[in-house]
Image (cartoon, protein in one colour):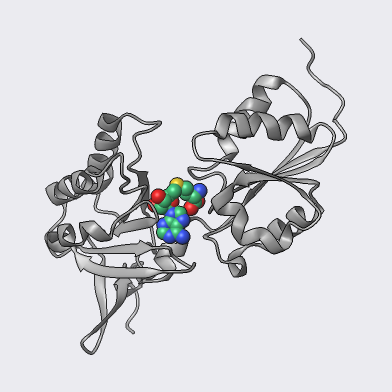
Length: 261
Ligand code: SAH
């Protein structure tokens, strides 16, 4: 077995693009895309980058073709600068792991950098105040790569400890019932007044925010789709009001135990 190979000429950047609006792309991501010979990604993520892609070779892929895309990126990165882009953070339900696994199996010494991006949990939370403040959990309701019974076990575990829970992939045409199923698990452990927010297209065009409570969340089921993140508050979370207006959700970090303010 060859333990050390010479690095190849090219390089590979696995780039998190953030929620979509270019204002939320990091300067490092911008630089790496500007320096790339090839930019590879799902069309939905490449379209907002159009202005940055002039003069580059652009490879558009589609959902479900992630393994092919990863292999292609690695093939090209032997000789070229390649940026493979992924929405939000590439390491959170994104392309980073599959690219790194394919690279690991190849045993090749390709320079690789993972560039972090603002993930949906951050983007969604920022639109409703400070719902995540301390410990929180993130669960994806997609059963494409994880069996539903495992997802249900995880939901029970995280709701049982009363911390806020962020739900990614809450619903899609193929999985219309997973959101309701998650609410059922939440209701086993949390009271009816637990705040809950539905944030669609956070920090990008057509953003919509709905704030409600666990007992009434089902009424908003039609607002939940694959462009939506759901935040279920924890035992300490409360709705933040200004007069009669609902402004968001606050989960106190615990300063009130130590200070008067
Ligand atoms: N890597 C991405 C997540 C991909 S999984 C990230 O770090 O954000 C896809 C899921 O992410 C969607 O179904 C939705 O639940 C969530 N999501 C991604 N972008 C979003 C946005 N701008 N607003 C709300 N939810 C978003």
